Length: 380
Image 1 (cartoon, rainbow, N blue to C red):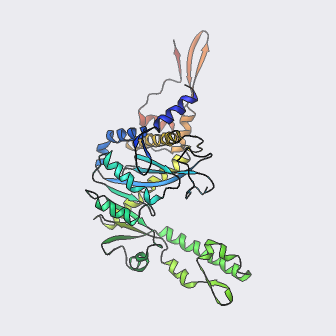
Image 2: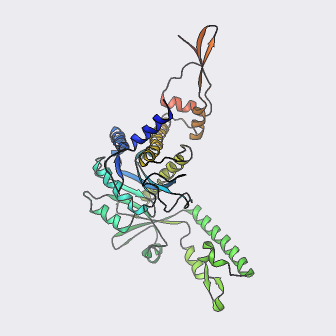
Image 3: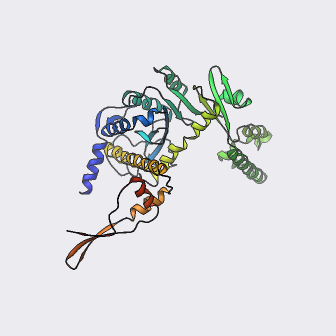
């Protein structure tokens, strides 16, 4: 098997087979996702929770014919073309599907097409979508409610940009309803201390800078929000704005149309870390980057290979959990990478010599119930 065969296989995975969602085509990889979902349908149907988030992946080159575009980079590389990748997980952390869009696609436009695909192709009728701040718009929430049956949601809210959050919701504790919209107010005490500490550091540096002169302050975003202009065009610390910021320390606000209690909603929302961890794994351990492909279909196939790796990773983790085995994933990968077998010729006979297991590879082998060959064995 040559390298070109692997590239052709990637292109086949990303090959167009019909009309897709949000301007992207339906591809061969979609059929594989749907078959995998059908295989584990009983696992998903227990709890109709779908966790969804997006990330951006930048390209070293042009990024294909259409998928590589400049947009908001979550990798802090606005100078490079990128693509937007959305991933949906089930309540067990298993990847359900991934969608890929041009790099200038807004997050708020990505959720609804994925929900529509899951209902049409995965035949999931009842679900509750869990998504982070910025993933949904008011129009998206209304569209979810109009579906038959309605798709429920638990979503984060941009506190500082939503007027009724500051004026009404944060004045009360735990739970509040505003014109039929249900909000849950949550406090993370660790984040509360961090927010207060970070702001104190900014204000201390700001006061020091004001004593030296204020001409360069307006260009600093961290400083600018705590400044006001006084007589003579000079800057001063806006104590009113400082007090306003303190109201948000450690808080996050959720919006939902479910009838679950506030504690359950907060706990479910915090499970979104699974998606964020999935993205970190794909970009680092699974080495999705760099991407140099010139064709959109090969790019889609490349990213989908990382998706399949994540499916296998989660399946292995679940089997390890079921057997009470614990291991660091990076050590599992390191151990399996070092597992090798060489062929020896000794006194006219042929032997295969296997290396010893290292790291946590033995835990993975046990969980997968794979029988390793002997360290040394003679072959005909």
